[in-house]
Amino acid sequence: MKIALDAMGGDHAPLEIVKGAVLAAEQYDKIEKIFLVGNKDILEKIPECAHDKLEIVPASEVIEMDEHPAQAYRRKKDASITVATALVKEGKADAVVSAGSTGAQLAAAMFGLGRIKGVKRPAIASFVPTLQGGKLLVDAGANTNVDVTNLVQFAQMGSVYMECMQNIASPKVGLINNGAEETKGTELTQAAYQELKVAPGINFYGNIEGRDITAGICDVMVCDGFTGNVILKTMEGMGKGIVTMLKEELMSTARTKMGAVLAKPALANLKKRMDYSDYGGAPLLGVNGVSIVCHGSSNAKAVSNGIKAAMVGAESGFVQKITDLMPQA
Image (cartoon, rainbow, N blue to C red; front, side, top):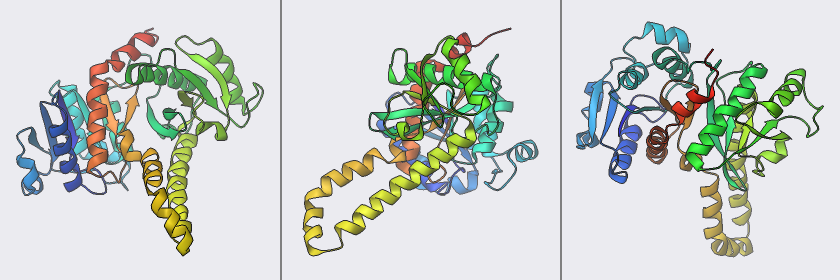
């Protein structure tokens, strides 16, 4: 298994990216090579790059977070995410992983790998923590404006991914809405509800409300990318806020400090259940290859888990299974 890693993408690049590559290289025997794509002069100064499973692939440019993704992709031909994606296209790597600009990664995947035939729009599928473990949110930010066909395809692609990655037979799909009733929501969600009931490859549960998301009643939760990204960022912020408030309350008096000592293992477990880095990266579903999006602030642990997601995803064959499901006309 060979992984192309955008070494220059992310808030803590390149050091944390390289450290994550080393963690993955040492932890997963199936990994034959990790290509560190980025500025050769900078990477060669990092001692960890000398690991025998790591290989530097030069790329002189970086697409920054504040740049227009599509324009920067066209202008910066030697950008690290472009070169890394090209390694997958050329068959030199099995998957690409990046913690850089999500828009740039989407552009590189769309233009470099291409869409799966029949897929109208690729989507970001992100695992979110729930009371029933990690569940899949699709779309988590790629498409702010969608139509009924997009939502149906998000459900189909998400179902395939959960079948492949979580070994769930016939994953339960929920449509995120402002009410559980069939008649609730906008014209878009009402129309999507009717299509989801009869679409192939979907075990449709029905509408789910915001409070149902963390309950984990559905394996795949479908919405437009604007809504999905707001949900994702809200959950992330609330998770950090709850942990911080708990710490403040537990340290407020001598009595609560004593309780904090006893509660420390439980608090550590709670933090772990809500930690994004444990879920690895989010795949771009609907493109002709495995492209994993990592959180922009990914540390070495998160990068390593993103590489694991790429490795398992490439092994699972979910891209081909999505291809088989999509209409070929």
